[in-house]
Image (tube, rainbow, N blue to C red):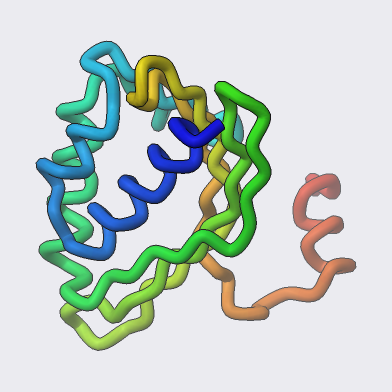
Length: 136
């Protein structure tokens, strides 16, 4: 179980150090990232993750990642994250959600990414349900 916990901690540390290379080193060469709510955003390989977070670190200079909660069932980590920071234009950057990670040989081999931008309370639950199911 320590390898799974350590992998999550290495990711958190690399994110908070704004080190895209250290982050990429946490993942297997053939790493697969799926985004079940947004299938077209899935990708394969650690280099895309390096590019993604390189951009984030560039445009959100004070980016911070916190693990809100985690449960481990070797070789899987069920994690809840909060990403915060301020974009270069002064607007807040806030994402939260879950990331399920599969670890093999101390490297993350796959992840299911369920992170979403905070909508800052623009709609209540009734409005959200209506928007999801009512089509005129």
